[in-house]
Image (cartoon, rainbow, N blue to C red; front, side, top):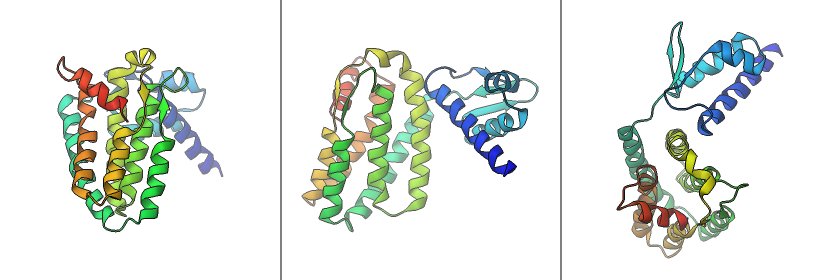
Length: 231
């Protein structure tokens, strides 16, 4: 029982620290230490250390003995590599899934996609939209039935969530454009019409458009925002 409670406490602290990183309470490069977290959460060192070690194992933090835990900076190459990895893996998994998905599966996916459409408001910020975007991609990936691919892509999405939040948190409060699911629906509609390769191309373009949001240039900023506004 005591071990179960310790594990639950560790998970709560892990989730809280991760959420603070995503929400911009802690920034990339900032140093966390056990003492400040013990004071913040009012718990013993053990669950704090266990949570920090897990965050280190996942590449969120890096430990410096007798100094603290630095929040890892996610560099541009890492983000681009992850996006390209996702485009390749999810594209191939979509081809695999399309061979076995029934029309009922596709209609259900279409309803699920529509359920993720929301307008960004103070109660539904940009980051929440990104989480819904991730849910669509993981739902689509699940039809391929490859658990390993699912787990690796899910982890990759977690890294991109941090990148998205940490590079855009200061803009979230001013975002008011309508976020629907137009491009995701295009993917489903291509599958309904048995135009699988068109669906794969749309899916890969949808994944790669993440770069236009995280690394906007004068030439791509409006195009990137317009594409995301159509999700």
